[in-house]
Length: 164
Image (cartoon, rainbow, N blue to C red; front, side, top):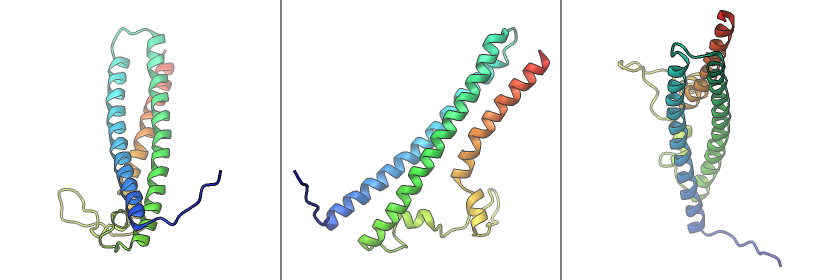
């Protein structure tokens, strides 16, 4: 049985575009939810780790669990970033195909922010260049969160073993 490929209609393309925007937004929401849950879980683990009177095995288990959690969530973040990047490229291509202008396109806005970032509590605007866009981004902040948590647990493991 052969399946014939028909040319998609504008309604089909708009439906795909809408689905991509929805998927993008859901991934962004999931990304922040995971980051919040990881911070809460690590707070719980840190509270348990620093409890007085805990024996070696549970304490080391907490350390290892903290490192494993950080690695798993970092890998999830890498995949989520890749998916968001792919959705952004596909969304931009669909905006061009549909004829949505750069001023109105969702993915055009995500790629080219018209308002430069501002230092909090001031009116100072940062320059609009690749370096600023890289460091002043959710991707950089969330991508840095998991390695820092992993390094914290690794440092705690080293310090605990040295003190033992």
